[in-house]
Length: 435
Image 1 (cartoon, helix red, strand yellow):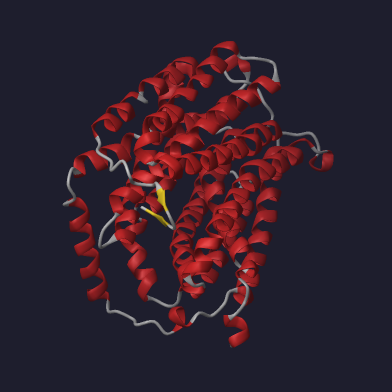
Image 2 (image 1 turned 90 degrees about the horizontal axis):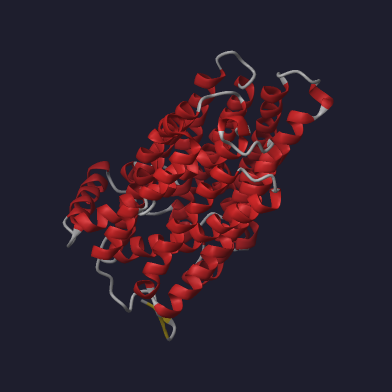
């Protein structure tokens, strides 16, 4: 028992947070590209895949159940098993004639399992180590989560693109569904291996096994108190407004970026292959997104959130202009496309820092953890609802006018940044403490 208890965090932190990132990127990004390659319209892709944000939006409402039923360790292993089953379900049904409905059902299973896994993993992180190790491993867990993004959005898409063109399947149109089926089978096997590994590798912290178990009535009473106190915060309309509109433009752009890169030039797209998209958007893009986030965090810790708020809101919105340029110029140069996507993703990463820090800022107080969960729920809503109509708008307007519309949608975020109030000292490191 002591050996398990004293297991090095290196044995489970990297793999746990890599496993946390994979299903999220599969549901949010890989599904969009797969459906595009399988001939689903942009309207349906945006509408139905945006609905998949719902489990993350309502995550705060069922997190109490994860707290009082079983251990966090049990939830992690169980959800990884369900995620593996969901991935296998997608793989099995992609080649069928009813693939859209059936794969969507399995993506829903993936989404709810993944959101539940997030709750359990983040709670287990606090149980599994002391505060000193938690602080040390925070950057490591973020790094492996980002690596999962690169693997899902980049390497996985490149692999699917390779399977689409390989002669292993012949040269018929059936290549595409078979290619994606094989890709998801590989993913499913990988995730089942994660499940088995974590069954043995995760430690058994006493706080997780022998913690005080509260009754449902007590937990939901506490939840009601945190809910009411959140919405009684000073200037709550400003808080909710900013959380909903800060990414109003980006929420629509992100759904149509991959279809734009994949669509042929005859319909206004750039005509890239699946593997090209995996490289430019899922690999180069994610790398620059990460670099932007690292720079944002570094600068905010030196000068505070208020000092960098305007540069960050400009950074998350203004680079969207590269898609206006790409839609009008339709450049042949792959290098130019890569540079354009890198610029937009770097700005997104840099500007997103302010968004996350603002959520931490408005969550300060007695119910910090629960209030932060409400913020992330509103963040998901700000992505889900605009994303649902983005495909319909794109098909109505065409790519050129759609990306101009995206730029118009950035205006509300500037308005809300103008009206909110932030303590100038928030985020600045003072000695060994960070305010």
